[in-house]
Length: 351
Image (cartoon, rainbow, N blue to C red; front, side, top):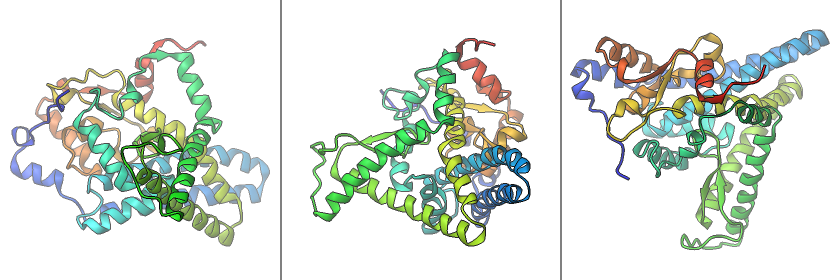
């Protein structure tokens, strides 16, 4: 199918307004990376301190910390996404470093592979060629089905399924590197389809060649290196507990928040190739939602699809400008994430 129709910002904004909302700051992307890691550290070390004081305090603090850490892990993935669009920093090399290492590597993704994958999603949003289509196509679904998915996320099943596939592919790639096996994009490797966690969803994205396996090995290598660094910092400053909280959040709350975020972005929208204002959903988010499922303005997803060159910290401004120009009535806008979940459930959840 043809690519979806793109919005023409020159027909919507004046030149000065467009320059304002597309200006890439030299410090705000860096600040957002520092903010994400600072919040992770405060939550992890705060919960560890609570356990040292009293086991009751620890029991109360731990779930709070897991929700906060999982939300910032999603934030790091979102900031990698910003880097994939070249929006973290005006210097290309620094932009790629920020997106690759403190962003993507921490959660097991690769900036460069993700960039190719993600731009295809923008070009063919909700069309058969869209690699993210499996994320929205199953909806609406039953409440029971959604509940089962949430249970798999919060019990670590989703995490271990994805990591098992990713690590198996990485092992295949490592062996290819050690034996100097040449790539052959036309044939499948003995490991079969190769999986990387490159989609915005964290869902498996297949690559079927030796080069893909080698790329996955490098991605896993960066992921493990970051985990070793975090473990070392944890042991030096406090002990095992902060790192355990990071890892548990990565396997549980991060997975759930990732799923909810992806559902909200495209599920049950009226996306078509002719109207760019229908390609995604914007969801208003309260403080709790911004802490968990919608960090760093990711809830303004319709604006992001309309104008890929707008940094995340200016999406709210773009949303307000569109409202003043009476474009909101053409957009898919939901008042909360709870409202989105209700909309994508075909039959109500049992009480």
